[in-house]
Length: 367
Ligand SMILES: *Cc1c(COP(=O)(O)O)cnc(C)c1O
Image: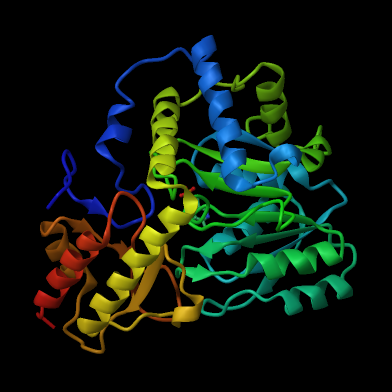
């Protein structure tokens, strides 16, 4: 059944399917500098740090307007000094995007390419760090949404920290849906956004940062509107104030989404729901004779890639249209090495939705 007010369930993170209560939290107009609103922003900032670590003393957070990419670019363009050098571990489009940003900004960059279907690897990073001691920063994507790959951020962090590097993690599609502790992993800058596992609507992203690392970034930014330090410093000094017009409706919806994450039982419970969704999805798709791109041990509980079937009459466009009529939107593939499509399982969706989806797919035997 379609959820109330929704034309279909979005299995396309993101935007993704949000609850009716998150959507209705937007039905008001708020002043961007009113004290009550600023207090809400402060509340969100401290809740985010609380979600990121059991030891919040050394961490802080900052919200930034735009989609997730803007916020990744804000970090890449604000935390690496002019003489710095960035190592990017790449196994998909989002790692590639980080390398592209660095190039546009003019940052010296070395890309460690793992192809599209292998996880990134700490030993290989370590070899590069030994070879190129002038590397100052390491960036990695936690869940490569391109394929659904779960990258080993703990192992990468250990390698980066053994060599004293600043550690940047794009946890866009994992933060809030996969449990980990930024302090345990010694992450300096973690990026995520309003419209992924927290289950808000699109409009801003956020950075969880080690406070000491953030303090070192004054004056480094190559962009005014994406100046991470300046945005953070303003929020700190003026108690929740954004430098420019903030997406007030999105912020209210995000606060509601944070309350609902808490009501669900926190990140560990949400991870359980996502994991169950993914298992039911993978099982149902296997029943319908679709092969997953990744082996189970590399598969995240967020999004799954499936090969097109070995049948010339298969058309993803037709599958997409017919499944949309059943109330689901699927996601086209994004890798170059094989024809695939993707199905996300985050958002306000559960195992019964996954069962209904895979039963519908099984029934479409037009190929
Ligand atoms: C969604 C996502 C982004 C940001 O994409 P936007 O379209 O800018 O929101 C970045 N990295 C990863 C891993 C993502 O899944």
